[in-house]
Length: 153
Length: 153
DNA sequence: CTAAATGCAAACTCTTTGCAGGTAC
DNA sequence: GTACCTGCAAAGAGTTTGCATTTAG
Image 1: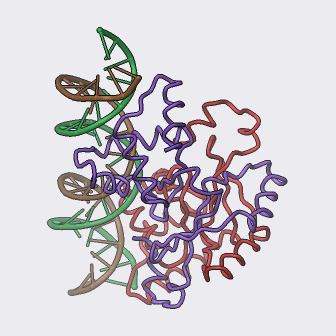
Image 2: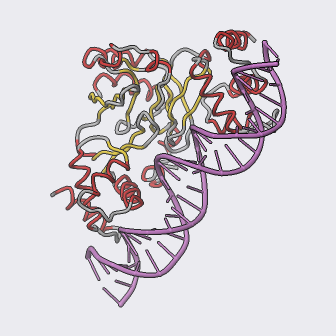
Image 3: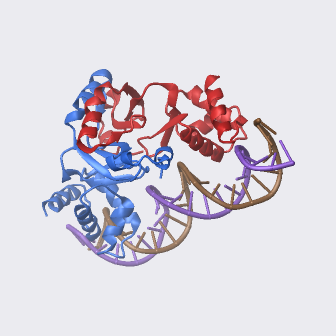
C-alpha cells in the first residue's frame, strides 16, 4: 500500500517507527473511508487487534495529523473526527445537527467566501477542516420541536 | 435593559424565574460582547459575584440557548463558545488556529455555498453557528514550523 | 542493542447531576 | 408557601500522561 510506504519514509526521516498498531489504525481509516471519531476508529481496529489500547489510537491519530496523513474536524458534538487526507479533494462537511448524518460538497461554491476572508482580513481559511452544522433534508421535513429546540446531543 | 425584560417574559411563560445569577450571566455576556467559553463567562461573572458556581453558568447558558438568547458554536479547541444572539446579524467566525483570535464577516460571500447546500442536498445550513479555522494575517506572516505542524493547543 | 512505542492505570479537564438549603414571585 | 434555583460535591465522559515492558530497525 503506497500510503504506508510514504508514511514509513516520513517516520524514518525523524527516527520514528512504523509499528503494527500504526498500520492497523491506518487500515481502519481506509476501511471506514469517512469521518470518524477516535472511539469509532478504536472500535474498528479492535475487531482485528483486540489488545490495542485507546491511548494508542489517540497518540497515533495525533502523529498522523502531524504528518498530514489525516485531517481533523470538529463534529457536531464537539468531538474530533478524522479522515485520511488523500481520501478526497478538499471538501466541506455538512453535519445534520438532528441526526448527525454527514454530507460532503466541494469547495467551488465557497470560493467567494475564501476570497473575501483573504482580502478583508488576510485570513487563510483552512480548507481541510471545513465543517458546518445545519438540518438535512429529512430532518427539515420532520420539524419536531425537539429537533429544533435542543440541537445538542 | 430590554433584553432582560424579554427574557423575563419568556421565562415566566414557562413558570421559570429571572434570578440574580441569570441577570449577572446575561450582563457578563453583554460585557464580553463576543464569543466566550463557559469558563471565560464564569471568570467574568465572578468579578461581581464571587460565590457563583460554574455549574450555574453551564445550566444558565443551556437555558439561554433554549430560549434563543445566546447562540453557541464550536471553538477551534472543541469547546462551546457562546454569544448573545441579538448581538449582531448572522456572521461567520473565523478562528485563527495558531493564536486563537476571532474575526467576523457577514454571510454575503457565503450565499453561493448556502444555496448550493440547499439545492444539492436540501441541507439547511445553520447560519447562527458558523465557524471556520485558518491562519490569520499575523500568523501567516510568521510561518514557524511549530504553528504549521501542531495546530492544536 | 537501544531508543521508540505500547498497554495499563491513573490523572486531568470539561461538563453534568443529585441533593439539601435558599429564594423569586 | 411552593416550585424553582443555587452552591456544593461527586460522578461522568473524553482525552492525556507516567511508567515498566516490549519491539522495530
